[in-house]
Image (tube, rainbow, N blue to C red; front, top):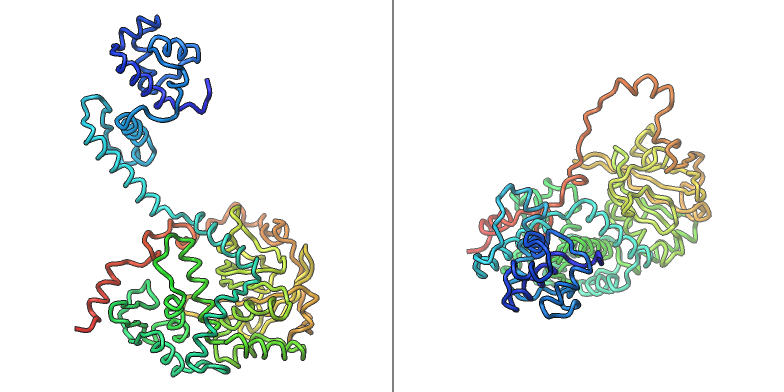
Length: 478
């Protein structure tokens, strides 16, 4: 028989045709010369009949065999019975340890509808909460590919930022606190500092009273201007509540982009970078100092502009002391480590790459330059370590060898070779070391919950709505 035939639906269609003809199960069994118990199993979807038996049944019931093989349930009631039967044998329901409800003709249709509806809601809520790390990494990989397709340059976001900068008269140099306040007022908001923001939030916006609440300066690692600008960017871009995790990621990338473009407007930033390139003196540190931003913000902005305006293919990484990649982007064909979904975040970078080697340098906080020979060629990297309350992170910007000539630090003699992902490169311990300790080591791993646990449910992952609403109740004007 065709394996695509659903046995539960076939059984319901046979039962429906039998009752429509006014036959009992026994009468049909006698007509086709089969045991009633066999037909009962077939009608209940527990036994697969041979094609010849379906032909005989169709003849006895006075219907075409094609009618019995249709994929649709014969009635609304039958569809409900099929849905409940399937739901009650699902792993999700089985995990609850609850008894099954007998699907009989005595069960009222209204009760069937209620039970099927409850199962559907149970499945929906389970799916909502089961945004697994794999799903998140896949969404991140897809977003990064879209960024790569556009060289991480988004003209429409540049236009939005340019319009906002023009509205407050910011044309060059650092964006001052007064400029941030002017932009806030321009978009119809006021700023308020609070020492009791929920830990899971960087800011909270009261849309009713047009207030933006920010943490006290001593309570954050972030440039307070960036937090305000990212919040304002949501409203300048007309964002609505994210529909799913992929939409949440897209919005986050967009507001980060606009915030950086407001801190470092495109025209003056590109002018500065083009002059530096002509002098063969490109340096992330100089871009940082001219616009008074963090090194990471300057590196992000450089990545936005380098390929589109300077013709330089590039890669970027933010790597923790443990070698784990937290952020990454490339359009220069560097071979990032990746999982089967194509995701890079959460992977461990080669110990010979600059982004990891910098932590072993004599002065990790000094500018670090390095050439690394890889399978796809040689890359030059400039790496800077930033301190945060969560530990040290390496901010790494790299380019293919041919483009190193445009950068300060190209004279470095520091050189390394990497053959990753070949395990013999750095993932397999040296034989002598492994021989001494392989059978005598038992590390207790520090579980990275943000990589292993299911993503928290909710429109804004990880944020407790009750905490947010309680905070707003405390601070809303009378």
